[in-house]
Image: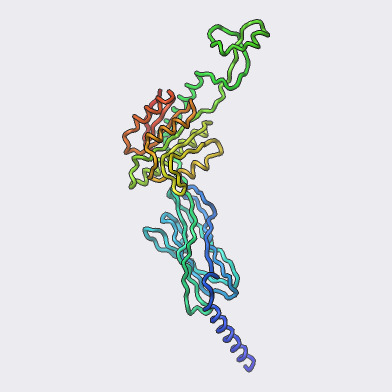
Length: 358
């Protein structure tokens, strides 16, 4: 009993000393940050959010709570404390830290809705050594994730694209593509003079013409026009983006090379004119990110977007124009694209399709 009392006094004194030191703790010695397992994801695909809390002092933190604001569309586990508001999902994660400890609070979540979603810190609450007092500091970290648009499974769209690519291939095979010479054959008198191979003709003692191989990939310019989009119709905008993704990926699978154009202001990109990217097999990431960032705001009118698309497209490119269902200028726009090079043109508005061909 005699030895227990001094030990008890020592523990009490040590606790008081640690409490006094913790009361004088610099709030900057307790930090929080956030890391997402990915910056891009498919709709509904799970990913992890790591909230990292750090104690830079030797004195333990008996209580720490991280308050964060998650995107409204976030799906959270039942174990997480949260409340939902229009501005987002407010969460509170509680833990404790030893001296100089760095701890990761890991949570799995998912988001179904296309777009740019921001995970942000709000406040960090932590107590003194004995838990008598609580300190609150503002945290300002932010992490964003881009959710791609969904791919549409629609029979009408599939049939329209199959017919469209078939018409392109049929028309292009009627015109020889002088890219690769595979041999020579006898001149019949019906071939143009420029196809005569004069060196071979001299060697054979008769006129021969070059045989060409058709080897160019189908080139298609896909244009997403946002002008005319109802700002309140977010589902309509998402549907246009889903249609653009489906069209581009379907055409790439068939061997086409895609140039994609849109006049949308891409969230987080700061583009001040039409946005363009090239899509080919194995290179769809830039397109998917761009479609995830599409907003209902636009810089250029549809007329300027068409001018730019025609100017930047290949000479034999076909066109697909995607635009809101409310916009009634589709027929005039598709006629203009068709006249630009005499190629194929397809108009898509929501899931309904109408076709104009040369």
